[in-house]
Length: 482
Image 1: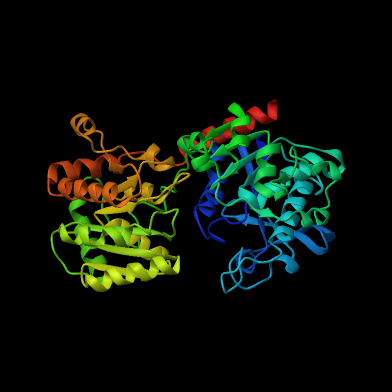
Image 2: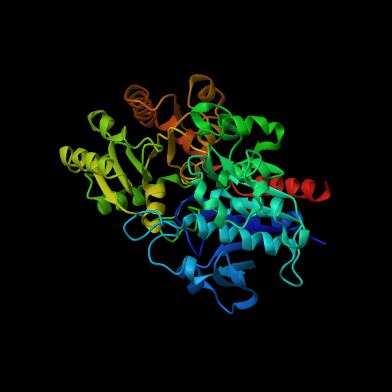
């Protein structure tokens, strides 16, 4: 009999995506299946999710789920089981999963995702006839309260072991103490060993405190969040959990991100036909209105935020262009950063071009046509864009942190000598370290033999879900048997 796991997430591809969490939640069922794990994914019933359901059937109903009627629909996420919490009072809204059309967080996010967690704890505990699960896996703060309900108010007293995965410690789901009375938890849950956090209610904190195991999406990030610089106020809690906190590196979908077959590219290529990338580069230059020359074309695909180090990019723009390079950027976020980038583009027409927003197909072309991808994150739990870059021969230039440090081998003298380098790392997200990294990258680009080595090494790395899927399956089995 396969091990059964209920995976609880606020988004999952291909139904709903705002970030990397969706990629992971969407990929996990197929990643663990070869290892004897049958995973069911549970999502909130946003309009996009409901629109993507086919042949859904109702399997459970709540007359009042923290004050709103709700029903549970069963469907498919690809070829794998999917459960959707259809609660119109919570999720039938315009805007993103977390904010209104104006970008402001929904004022009742605490109730929306507490209800989501309450429903998942019921399902994990056996509320739906014929459905029982060996392990509950909660992703980020939006799912974390399921673990609190399992611990303090399990369905008919039935509990299951749990895993809490942190995709980004910066987002914790912290709310004022006044909401506690609306959570439907016993008074015992209001304690430092429960949901209380800094005199308020901490959703992520509760999951980290109460889960049987905690994982992050890279080994380095699991070590970093024990320090105040990265722990965001919860470093003491993480440290107290000891060896119950570990890191499992994210993978990428090797079928979707495959330069040999990717329909978004103008010219498909392999590690043996890298010269075919040039057609993609020319198409990318035309798409962004950039001058055509033989110098390196840097790309950046990112949320424009302080965390991602995008505030430093306008500062080094003159240095980048002055050394013969160009930049194409796709992203959105902080308005001040957007304005600073537009000013840099205005200073260097034809050399720097900015596209505000997000375009999945364009991001594929950028990876397939750009020479190097800039990822100057101040902290990065895992990161996926550098993995896409490696797979597409787009050399990553990354800050030495979290999953970036785990996945990119710096082109230092020793690594080049051994023939194992895959990219460029730098320490400290400031002007001088980043400008130096750009200069190093340009110097490497001007040495065709070294540049081809970086590209080929990256493209032959295996960052599929194969290894990570086995690690998650082993963790689930350990918990179920324990």
